[in-house]
Amino acid sequence: MGCEGSASTPISTGGVDDLRNLILRTLNDNQLLVLNTISEKDQSLTSLLKQISTEYGIPLSTLKLNARILRELNLISYGNIRNKRSAQLESLGRFILRLMLDEPEEATIQFAD
Image (cartoon, rainbow, N blue to C red; front, side, top):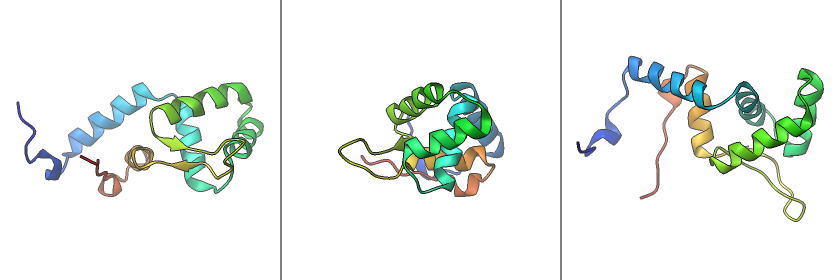
């Protein structure tokens, strides 16, 4: 059951759909909303979450919890009080978002050995 050479093998359309379904079962709607918003705007996480909260009526505390989970999964990164910077997608977050947006040809990722 080796995986030699499988990294360069393109994933089939059925495989893309299966992976998309797995991600949909793993990430909730709020997490996908946060991922998508971070990809579209260059702002601090607090600013983005406040905008989402206002626009969609989702409690800010819920969005903060979901953002923390996304960071723990290495899908996003963001600053803190001492290190202020914009929220951004990590490589895995970009991969997942492209896959969810039905752009599998753009959904490539390279892991460090």
